[in-house]
Length: 295
Image 1 (cartoon, rainbow, N blue to C red):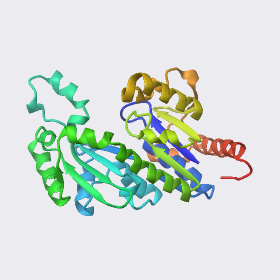
Image 2 (cartoon, one colour):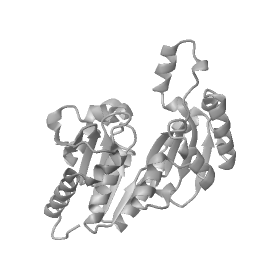
Image 3 (cartoon, rainbow, N blue to C red):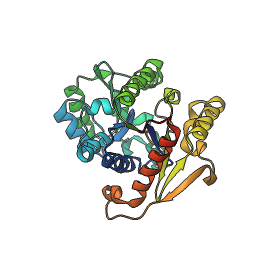
């Protein structure tokens, strides 16, 4: 069973905590659950502890993977998250106006300073994008330069990053991971990044059993077949730009909207009854769709 979790907003939709909560609910039902975060991007400034942890561990690691480790006991974090991008925000000193500075903060590509790729065979490579790192503040730059040396990072340009991420070989690597996880587990929860409807395009070759769209206050449940049809349609018309979630989920009637109750801390999301109800609903649907074999 493959569950895809995507976010309606570019940031802070709540994908990771929903993923953790749903994984806990599935584990309570004695199912073998695996989390898969194919691609992650995280801030060296806003999530600085990832820089410290990466220095200690000797590999670039994202905040989401650390949360999976802390709350779900996951290990082999580089395989849970094969591609990781470390973002360093540009310094205000780089711009003539505050408006230009604010606009550039939304440009993720020009903030990628380090990148890790862990192939299915186990080989890990790190890259440093010097032209982006030059744009950040000196105190943060010094930390990232130390980390780059610790990780033996290879120099790369922005164009290299784009080329690597769009390479069909990378897509195939991610496909191999998911094939392995699907074979060995009852439930694989795939968490996308930012507001991307698909973390990698060959995910469409797998049977998606459920698609959850997360946004503040709600979890939206979308029909997997409708989702796949809309993704293919938008890809054909718009290319990769059509993969933003708001272009796939265009109207509220496309989804079943589940309200979330407020909790003292976002890590308490797993205590909500609606998460258990979502888990039971998915398993019930899988039981009906399957030909006599329960998940």
